Length: 353
Image 1 (cartoon, one colour):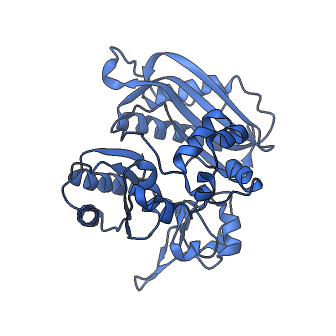
Image 2 (spheres, rainbow, N blue to C red):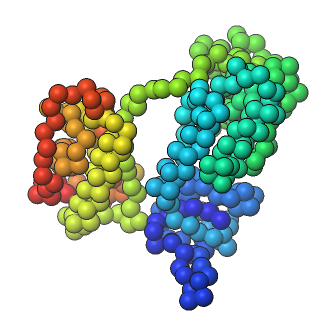
Image 3 (cartoon, rainbow, N blue to C red):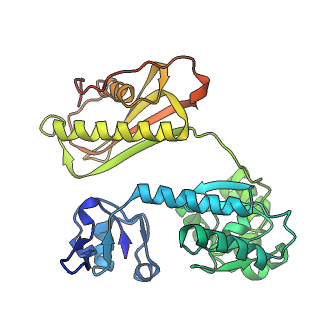
């Protein structure tokens, strides 16, 4: 089973109550996979892969639409369940957190059992737990026994359990760094660890080389950050077909308004207003253009966001068809810090879309 596409892929109900699912082979569009079951991953399918490419690898996979409202609800349930066991939690994604358990007196298995039991009771979902002396190693070992696994390692375990892993398993070693490491005959974490810091600095620069030297030995002094302010909030969509600024103006306008309303809801749910509103356009030649405007009164209102995007559009040459459209709010501040926020009526009578 894979998750991709739109509401058009919602399972249909037969008269007998059974459900009929779309197959991945029937997908048409430019979307990417949100996720895939382990059975689909065994066929080479993975999240972020274009759905049309995935269809060639797993044509018989069942296709479900994305449902972000559902994901957000279960994400909150999951994180609240973890916090019920350990209040020291760093949020790093929709389904992943770091939790501080240094003060616990139980052993690793008991801590993991408490976490897994709380998550299962709250969500009906299993989870994988990695317990280690720092965030780097906890992330690595949480991936070792998926799904529904528990892995605990100490610093003494690094040579025997970490060094054999591919270098790319470390967050921060991306495709380019992996490719360069491979060109130097290095493919595993342990092979990085055999190199001197001077050699790594010579080949990867002083800062990145020093970082490689530390992480390959399992060293990480980053604290668990329980709160951080977002830099920006954005929404975007990729169209199934390229849209023309004039011929498809109505569809573009509706889409832009919907994105602004979603962005507004995100701001209000998270308790922020924005002073800077921007748009993002990707054209048929894959060139990406962004424009921003600073507004006098910070806002989270959909009408004000929509009005600002219209001003941004006036500064873009719309001679090519449009592949992607996005909106962005930045220069954020908590809602309670402003003294005045103007209210506007929603309007579609704008230049541009």
